[in-house]
Image (cartoon, rainbow, N blue to C red; front, side, top):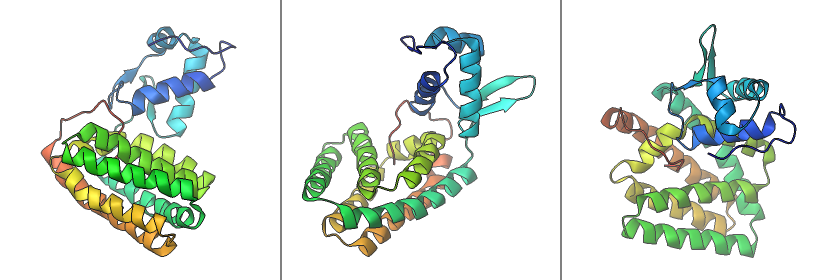
Length: 230
């Protein structure tokens, strides 16, 4: 990975972004040790800058700091993954309702395009492409909603839950289950129906919660390198 341009050597923000991306993108695995000297060399940052970044990422729930043993990527258990999705259900339901009220014609056009491409991806067996469209759809809903506080919380939760999300996205048959759910969400948004949009999102995420234990049992060792959502 290329060195991070920090401007001032100990400024943590660029280093935080780089390490965060490496964790959520799958470059660093759960429970992997994060050695300050190695991170400093990899990202072209000072040891102090890396140390500050790890403290911030620990506050976000992505890194676990262990006394006298340094830091490691925090592994999220199945029960915690379920809790995270339950919180997402409430917040993303709110955002969907707001997005239904505020979506412009251009927003609706993009939403329909994503829906069409989702259909094509599922029909063509393009699981990774479908996963990327999944992420784009959920991100677009947050953007349209204008709920910046909810968006900040949700982005942090998604980062913590990325491994479970990827396992679910790769689970055989999952796209055919989630496609009609996503199309229902898109239809409600395009119809400008807040209640229907919130209900569709909540039903979708309830389906995710129901599926997580099955996926966890079926693929206990499977690790992904993609940050796709469901």
